[in-house]
Image 1 (cartoon, helix red, strand yellow):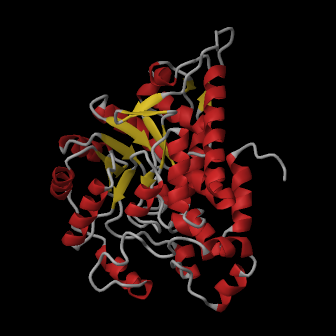
Image 2 (tube, helix red, strand yellow):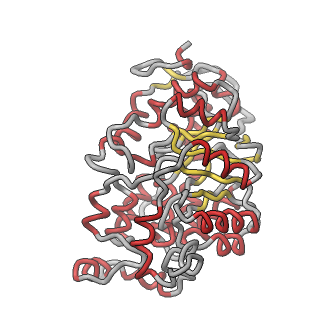
Image 3 (cartoon, one colour):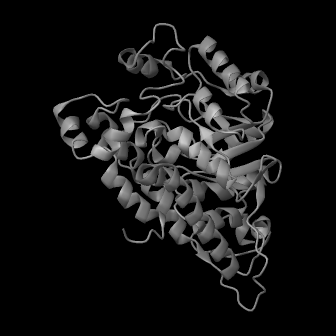
Length: 388
């Protein structure tokens, strides 16, 4: 096998190994997919300042995110159906993150349950919450995350209603896959994935099945999920969830400066500038374009993290140089997981780290915590405080 040197190499292996519906679930956006594309391509408009004759020795990428020590300011983002990308996917991704020294975020819509991941790892992980109409279920879900010693609650704000994702609809996305003629034909070419899935701990939504009244198997799950996302979610409900949790809260899905100010008012420990990977409002700004205005709005009053579009360590550096205090990778680690399981997630993290470290050095900086204080970027097509 050819040497793996970047995230795209992992993506190519991933596409060969994983069934089409799960590849498309990861590698697509809503509607025309314009925002999905912009999330990555807009990073290309940011140019770096090369510096020379600077002592590059003693470099460090160590930092903190919400007070937690991290090997680099990168967390694994919450991704639904991760356990369909590779058998026991959430468990293996969480262990890879633990060993590397970065946070792992478990999605409400995971295959492995909160308890599965807690029993497979030693380091506390973060739990991402979707708010549902069933308040009793939400309360029990929060308690389960507390019992598992999760160190932060990540509340997703941008999925009160599901964006139209054409590929998922056409593929009949489900977990496990429904056995139609189309899926059977595709699964026949993914025998390695199938063999691994035979021994998987779970093949349905572990945080839901068996935990909701009337939902004992996946045949009843689709209708329940479609009806459960809470369209009435507002800032009062967010404040109540924060109070119920009682620990550190990260609010994900902020793309507007006014919403960032509201997140500050309800006492968020961090906000995540994110458009759900381009899977919700198509035509919205890319996360990296939205970042400067949000930083201007909240300053240093709350940690600002960035999600959506990161495919390299250079992307991480650009976000940090603009003022973000942390970043998230979703698709990048899914490529690695689907390609090679836990080893692939570790490889993705190694690639991101190596690129971040090298780029930082060539920009004349030795400490990742100084990136937002020095002007490492050449203004070109972006506006915001980092140009000053």
